[in-house]
Length: 302
Image 1 (cartoon, rainbow, N blue to C red):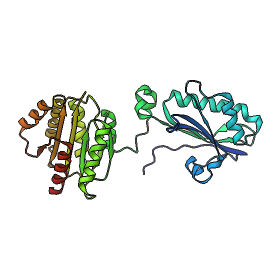
Image 2 (image 1 turned 90 degrees about the horizontal axis):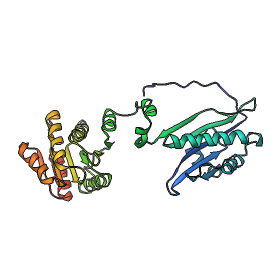
Image 3 (image 1 turned 180 degrees about the horizontal axis):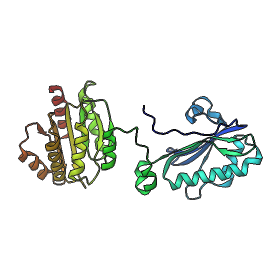
Image 4 (image 1 turned 135 degrees about the vertical axis):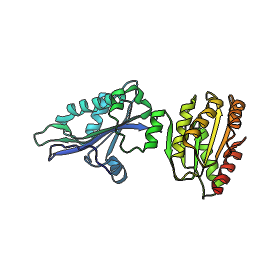
């Protein structure tokens, strides 16, 4: 791994250390602010090894974090009373930052009492919801992208949802539910030998350039043996998808077979665009089952 940034902090010998963090409890449908006296220990470790040390308060977004809730956290981690006021200020500010930044996680670890008896947030981190970055140009500009692959970066810039998997069939679909169904059928008919190589959702209303980018991303994977394109035209027009496929095909010149299923808005026009191109390794399919089986057969043939 290449190290791109180094954080240097003064050394402290704390008298007391705690964890303070905010995340979403999906079961409760609201933010939960958590505190634990196990400072400088990852919260995952605390949950696994000492779950009873964690104090939780669920926050109503309309009312915000209330004073008594912040005090309950301070009491629950046995924070000395003289630091309750400072702790409540930190907790309130952390929650405001969490909401304002559209974060999925905001945490301070550790929050310490120094040798000169000051409450100090020694280290913190935030994870921002990527779907909300368009509202935070300042945060987007400093986004740490080193862990991303080239394909992931291209997908993010094009507004495409993409996750790399270990299979041999590249999948391009519009809509997360349809994408999961397509992957499931590919896995089922592959019998554990052949499966999806990615999750790629071009989204609703995708234009030809987005489709072309999606296909370029898929075909950049050297393990791909076939491509399955499954588009249901609602907002997305199938003829736009067809033009995008041909655009990417001319640029990338793939050698692997491509199975195409177009249904819905402008589907007939889209199929006509594909058929009129006269490309031999483009295979059409009517049903999703038919498309998945043809993609599996094509991958095995490759």
